[in-house]
Length: 36
Image (cartoon, rainbow, N blue to C red; front, side):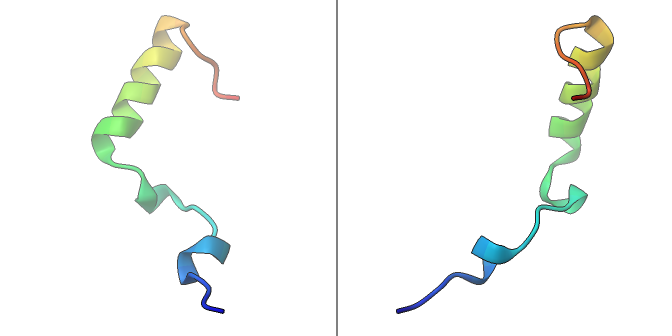
């Protein structure tokens, strides 16, 4: 049985692109979503 190394790795901030992060911030500022 083989297991993937990534399956047990925790997600870090580096996994998200700058464009994705900026999009999330924009939606929070507009009130479309909350930080939670």
